[in-house]
Amino acid sequence: MTTHWRITISSVQEDDSRRGLVTLKGSTSSSALPDVIGDAADRAHAWADKFGRTLAGCATLQLDGEDEDDDYYKIEGLDGSLSFDEIAERAVRERLHRQLQKEQSPPRSERSVRTPVGVASRYGADSAGFVTAWQALRDLVADVSIVSGAPLDDVTKVESATGVRWTADLRTLFMQHSGGFELVPAFELVDLGRVLEVRQMFFDAEEFVVEQNADLPPVAADAERPAGSPADRFLPQFIPIAEDNTGAVLVVDMRSGELSGCVIEFSTSMGGSETLWPSLGALVSDVITALTTNGALFQGKYRPEVGAGLTWSRMT
Image 1 (cartoon, rainbow, N blue to C red):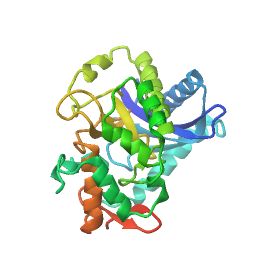
Image 2: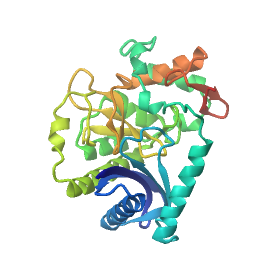
Image 3: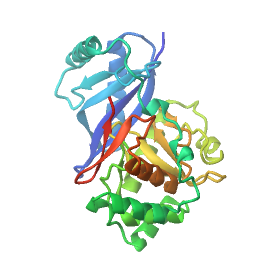
């Protein structure tokens, strides 16, 4: 029996203290957990060796068909601090304990059932420009990180390095913030200097996955579809704007079509989502609506709070 899996690992680049997350996919011709963990760990080490990265101690392993947030194995000791037998034993024991603590009917992950909330925004996709919406957000939120960004010359250089023509709103976004700001629940904006790093990490992961799976369809198949269409692969037309702590990113989809410039979510394990917002302006407008109407995002489950800055609380 073949078991398909995906492992999300944390690593650091040599001579760089910043961590990055990436998800690798694979399969094992066995359903025995120790065999699956062994193959996943070998794949993670091979990826790290190929791209000159050092693995952190912990990772998460999810098996095919397990879509709930809690249906995973916590893998410890990838940094060599534990033996393989200890890694497997801890993974099984930790998951068993977690399952015993779960409620009988746990809620599905909010991100797995996201809807394109921006389409329903009272502002609409075109009625409020991004600059106007961003200025309104600045007036509502006291956070210094959203009022300072990169100079236009630097933005233009990074745009050129991506090989993709950006929208004016996308350029403006990176001129208006310096990263680390949780604009929407779980996702922190990345600063301009992080854009190329995030893209390269996904490209490295794609290269590795392709080497291991020769039957994958070419990237061109996804790249030729209109913006907002599903994508299994990370594309050059995807410009990262925010990242979470699981390896997922929000990207502006710069493929051609009516929705060019829309915002989607992408992860190596799940691919690209449907359109979450038709534009950056619509995204910011939805945040403003939540702030000014005591509203919430992501199926009404996350409500904004403004203190020293903007944070999001899950409603119980």
